[in-house]
Image (cartoon, rainbow, N blue to C red):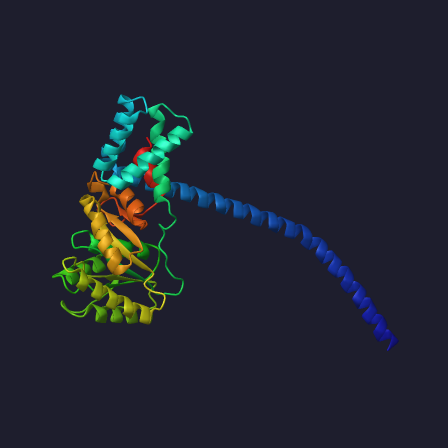
Length: 360
């Protein structure tokens, strides 16, 4: 028994020595690993920052190119005004208002914007017109930057996006471009052809679905849109889709019918996906200028719009409409179309937009 105790005592002593030696070996290794982890984290952060800068630069170039006509009609004319009128007198401010209104910024928004610029100039004791452009850019950036530009999708799939808008605004192609964007982000997308009223709407969406490589849930022309939506949600659940994008009819001739139809679709969505729809995106054609505002008001009342997709921005000098939308409707612009390519619909970035529109 005594021998057994001595052996145990000896083993315990040897174990303690071994543990101490191991700890002495581990400590510098842990320090080295910690330093290596820190260096790796720094390197990853630098790569992320570089990618972010490249993304911003690419977006700036795309916005600048897409806004060339608006840039010419808005910032180009403001520059001409600055060159011809060095003093910030009443004539200058009236001319500035006229330029903004003609660029489809809207009367109320133009007056509001000029008043803000005027107050800032007075506060900074600026009397030279050459400093006005930077103030305008800052005010526009603040006007657009309401923090609501990002899509609000849920973690528990599927997220549902309803897309609304009049025929001809670019609704079908916008849906295709959204699907393309999500698919490139490795998300599974399903489309629902709930615009069963318009002739060939289903066929057009099928063509785009085939091009993008996503599934389309559809019924026959004239079918019940609610039934299409129900089947699409069932399919999205069964296939574990990440995003379900629903096309809807764009009828404005009879607002009552539009409201009834959308209300029915929303009830089905809310019953099957209690948190849905996550987004109701209104597609507006930038070339229609102030008409887009009246369209937006009707759809906002009928559907509860959560965001704007502004199409054909590259084909118009009326890009100032984006300011009127932000100021008068308080609905965030979430995407803008700056070209005809599949990747030419860009997530809206107020800072980059203002920079591309006003800065040289």
